[in-house]
Length: 397
Ligand SMILES: *Cc1c(COP(=O)(O)O)cnc(C)c1O
Image 1 (cartoon, rainbow, N blue to C red):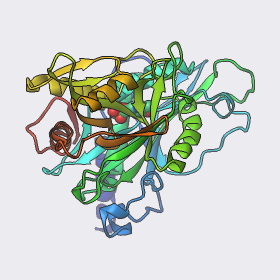
Image 2 (tube, helix red, strand yellow):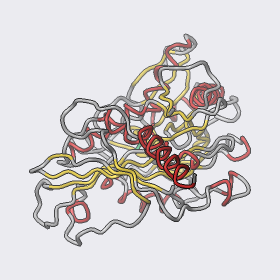
Image 3 (cartoon, helix red, strand yellow):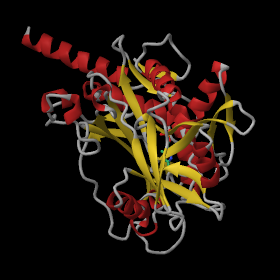
């Protein structure tokens, strides 16, 4: 009987494992096929066991029990992806990524829905973007749809890590590094594509839609035409940390990145920037700068443009805007709202810009912030499954 039950339980395990393993897909290169799963022997306390309130979750410091790793070499192409316990990597000190930033990453979230289903928001867009970032880092191409299936397998293994608390999510960080042990400046002949996950608390604690202030100094430039600002490469973010420090020292929350002699607004911190104003023709308008190579093509940005266009209440446009335009609109009382847009916050209202030692007040709070609020509600309703099923979400069943 004991033998019988132990056989049964091992069969159960295999069955469970075949659930983890998705069907064979026939594409070349990276495949979600026969993915090996090594479960951790030391599971960590889940996030709801670690913190009392969702507001106590510190973003970026805690990671789930497992990670997904796929390796590539120039000679052999992609190896079978593996799911292994979260842990340190053993890497050469000569590693290409460490010296020349042959690296890129992604950021997306898994949401625990009101129906108990785990949802991803337009994840294929992240896979597409990661491939374009990879090309910019001379890293190999991979099949985004296959890799997404691997990420879904990782989420099945770590499903208890997706916080069920209101406004929380599991942040997913796919990372791609050149792993050749060589200090030669050339494409890495080996690479590793891995994904780690960690819980994220609500961006706006207690539902407060707190606006942020921005530091805009034309001395500092994040990206330029012909550069790599449109790619999520680590090399774009390290240097920005110092400028964020200047913003903090000036009493501001985030950097408003300007570009060009006319001080065009481009992005805010690591978010795309949106303006809601009455344009020069007297029409209500929602505007964001165009994708000219200096702007990171945000999934949130694209979604806000598409959603806004369905409302029929505003003109929704991609246009260049400079600081003169912003100041003029404020002075003529045409400015309604400004907000950042990105996966971290969905939308993040702005109420002040410090520019050339002048403080410019943006009346986002006074005008009620209706557009930012509507965007926030409509997007989070989709993400948490409160809105009817939507082709923007992928469920992890
Ligand atoms: C990631 C990122 C964004 C936002 O992109 P989402 O896909 O909406 O999260 C915007 N700007 C920069 C610089 C970024 O790195």
